[in-house]
Length: 189
Image (tube, rainbow, N blue to C red; front, top):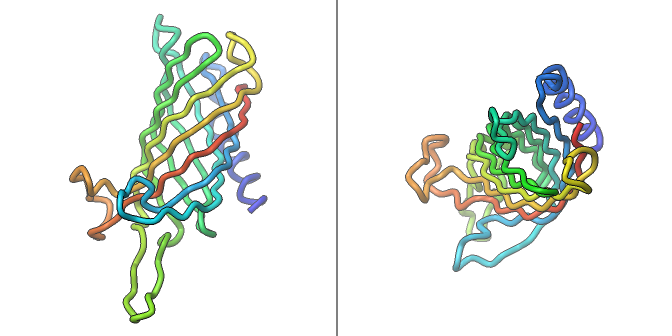
């Protein structure tokens, strides 16, 4: 796992740093917390498992609106011995020492999470490998300048969108999703 983290940091830096001089904010963040399959399901027992994420973004300010920024993000995550890569767009709202991020993208897991064979021999295929990647993050910087180290709190949800009629990523019929709560520490270059 340490090799994956180091590789992800190097890839994110190689992709984002060359355009950093375009008045953009480049951020790299390490997150740790707990995740559960179908955390939003009412009638399903919750089993929380450890999860980790490496999140990198490149945020560009929107014209004269200093409080609004957007850009791409990349995420490497681990859950149940499975690597999950994700990427998409992030929108940020900055005020004082705080920043709220909303990210929307696509993710792909290296294997099906939650797959198992029941005692009766029935195979539960688990989550689809291709999912949407949705998240909300709150960052707190040491000063209103919003540079250097910061702390953060995140909620992320990965599913195939079947509950809202968007199940076009996979032929699977059920995928209640993976819900993750994490805290993180990051650095803004």
